[in-house]
Structures are given as structure tokens and as C-alpha cells.
Length: 186
Image (tube, rainbow, N blue to C red):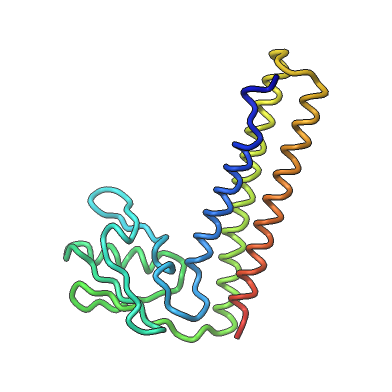
């Protein structure tokens, strides 16, 4: 019947997009220091882009302090630059091979900026889910054109794909609302 069309695979890919969104949102600070704040940052190292955890050790010695121990002395400036351009509003202080980031209290304006960044991440997740939907619909159209399935089956599968898409986007919105509430709490 419909061997090449796999609704479960589409749902799994949509869930992966939501998991990526949760990871990205974990990096947005809510007033407390967290290693996940700097984990998504990529550093230009050795001619390629590498995640922070592959060039340094991140620790939280105090509730409002992040310490980054860079392994290679030559990479300190690259790590510093990556943190400064990460759009997280962080300014590290360099002490030898250790970068210290003090997290100030979040003011209202900074909270609103973080909410905007969260909305941007959520929109990227929605776009990813829609791309997955499009991939599924393309497979269905091709199978219909090749006479592998009938029009009734195609319409039924299209409806299933749309339901899965709607559910995934609703979950993205729910995750975003939860993060927004967390950021705006004083």
C-alpha cells in the first residue's frame, strides 16, 4: 500500500525539531548561571566551527558566575569573540586561560530582548516542522503520480500529516510560552 510514506518517521523528525528548540531555549538565561547558557555557542577553532565543550570546560563556581577554562592558550581570544557575538549579551573577563562571565540581574529591557530571541528560536522550529510537512506531502504527491496510491489514500495521509504538523506547532508554542513565563518572572 504506502511503503515509502512513513508518518511515524515524519512525527519523529518533528519531535527532533522540538527537542532542538528546547536545547536552544535552555541556553537562554533566566537570572541564574547555567552551563547550558554557553553550550550552543560555536567557536571558530582550527579552521572549523566547534562547540564550546570541545575547546573548553564550563563550570559554575557561583550562582551568578560562569567560568570557562580554555584548554589551548591560543584559543582564548576565539572563545572570547564567540561569546561576545553570540547575541546573549555576555561580556567575559579574561584571566589567563580562564574566562569569567558575571551574570548581572536581568532588567526589564534585557528580559524583553531574551523573549525576542526565544521567539526567533521558536519560529525557526516552526519552519523546520513545516519543511518536514512539505517533505511528507511531496512523497504523497509523487506516490499518487506514480499510481502507487489512490486519491482517497493521498487525502487521508495528507490529513494525518497536517494533524501531526498542527500538534508539533502547538507543542512549540507551549514550550515557548513556558520559557517566556520563566524569563519574565522577577
